[in-house]
Image 1 (cartoon, rainbow, N blue to C red):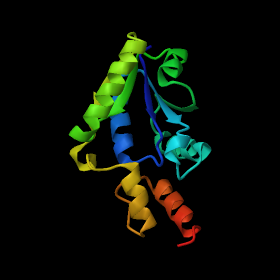
Image 2: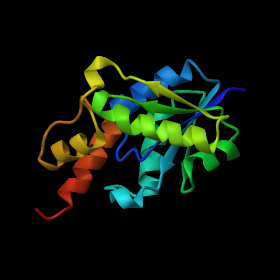
Image 3: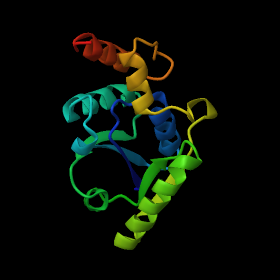
Length: 162
């Protein structure tokens, strides 16, 4: 079985993430969305909340599993018997960082390939950071995230002091 890991902090999951994921499901028998703890990024949502949001957003995809990890990505990928890591590329600015990661990963374990995938052009500008900023300022993010994520963002920002 061909298995790929789609890692990220998914804070929160966006339609751009989901677009890349749907493309990956056509190439692999199983895609594991691996939600990283990412405490250094100071996430808005807890690891458990992020996992729940991704599970809900992907429940219609039969060959997708959602998990979390705290280890080195390649250690996790090897433990899950994955052959590839899927990374989304939105713009040239993403490429340099992702290219460096891919080369480092190859050096650490050349049996696991990195696959770069581009989202639809309508999502190339989209990032979780932009969605959070927009939601915090009261903007409508319904075109960028699933409805349950929009609701979670609205609830989170309505409970924070201005």
